[in-house]
Length: 406
Ligand SMILES: *Cc1c(COP(=O)(O)O)cnc(C)c1O
Image (cartoon, rainbow, N blue to C red):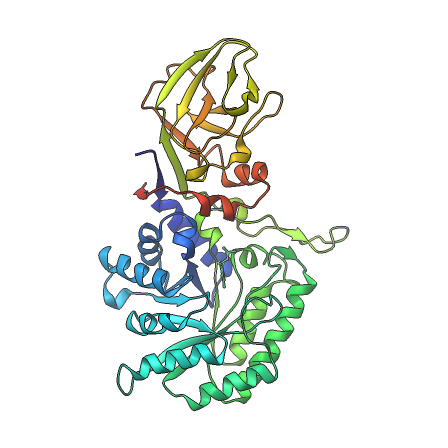
């Protein structure tokens, strides 16, 4: 195997607990396992999260939802322990049947989606009710229905179609990692408006949910704590409050920024320092060679050895998700891997399926030795910094089979 991902069951369960504790009493936690659990393998991670207590999981589409449901059953999660699975990123006509059949709960926001679902439910005979969660667009302008006339039409449709049950109302924040974000405050106000309209239409959702990992992490200041707001709002409508962390479960979180850094004293992280990376992406040395001073390494000879070096060859490259921005050239440091707990610098360009690292300073490296590409000592944040992106994209980009480890 070229490379693989070891998943720390203990860290995943601990991160889930830390986020749940930070979200605090009265707040349910939906564990987001979309995008194959952010590259960690949903089939491996979902059962761990369920055993850690997750009663809701979040996926992107119906196919992911069906696969997660099957993975839970295969992992021995009893039907009575099966969590609800929220399909968060829309649906097409052809998904409606799968949603009903696999007992998934879709997020909806327009009439057409609800018509597809109502048709699919009717196809399953009388009396069946399909739960849906309604997304309110409070400022992302990505998906969701806006408060006012648009929402009114959707609520009318729901009131007239008892085969659809409004189980939840939710929204998503655009700037959750910004402490005291005026945008978040505006989104909150729009969501309150939408909830008044939902209630006026006589609908009583069981769940009200909003927020991601950063919303939990950004709850250190009572003035800007969106979770306090969410809990109060849910209380007003007799619903249960829920927050939806994803990245934090896997041990990463964006740094908290402040809307006005000059006088914001609340840009404090609630859980980020305690979270631990769950993924250790590993490979093995497949070759070793010595080069002399003056020899070049890799495509376009961007790296010239200054002194004799011992180089190790790794069977991974950008096709596997090892970013090409980690390449090193003479005078420009790139990324590194961990060998025997020590840093081994990437040498020359990361290629499609191969990467060369410097093991001159590490004794006894042999072909077949394990190498850590991502994990303790070399984090997704390190890769993100070099690649000019965020940890989300790094972990999602890892293309390797995952398996459960300690
Ligand atoms: C991905 C996603 C989340 C989780 O976000 P993180 O930043 O990874 O915690 C929450 N809610 C929705 C709707 C999402 O799409």
